[in-house]
Image (cartoon, rainbow, N blue to C red):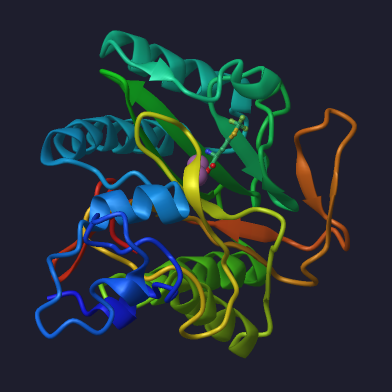
Length: 296
Ligand code: MF3
Ligand code: CO
Ligand code: CO
């Protein structure tokens, strides 16, 4: 059961029961408060669209195709292959299933997937550079199937990893796992970032602050923003029906970045390695379901 105080309703805000009265004049002190219309409250207060079972089923289907795409790319990742070839494989698989690769032409992005190698944090643009032994590569896949988006990414080793590569990929994967322990009603968006930041810092790594997880549904990026740093208890309370990504970008060195001349590629300022794992999550009554589940 949702306690009203866990929803952070201000006394002068509209009552969450939908009466149109101020909260303090309605259910705040009522002996028997009327049921809270959480979907209406979250839409009005945060512009967050809680998802219906039908929408969730749609996103689950898209999520399966996103994972199938990542699995296909994994089988091709080796020294000598170019990121353009990975892009074309992902694009074709989407097309074969009646899906649209969401990045293509999104705000002018020129390719169908993001491929981020070594010191590239995110939004790397596929090109004709061959991968080398010892590289790490993140492939970030977002498809649209029947109007529903799902978004996931993994970082892979190319050939044999260095000790640094092993470390940053291990820490980035564990950061997403730490975040997942917070995904339940009653916790907040701030708890997610806090868990990530605490683990990353313990490992001597840093968390990128310029890019955040995001609500997702019939659009690529919806409210809320999900920072990968934060304070325990801060931010919006998690409620069932929320769907958002968590996608911590973790650097071996410092957190600062710059954007390359292509206006997309984000690169660590100190050129240290960066790794990322991303899934799309649904908050359920008793925890969460990943709509793009894979082992970490
Ligand atoms: N998939 C990325 C994310 O996780 C967004 C990529 S935007 C693009 O939010 F335009 F670069 F594709
Ligand atoms: Co993504
Ligand atoms: Co995302």
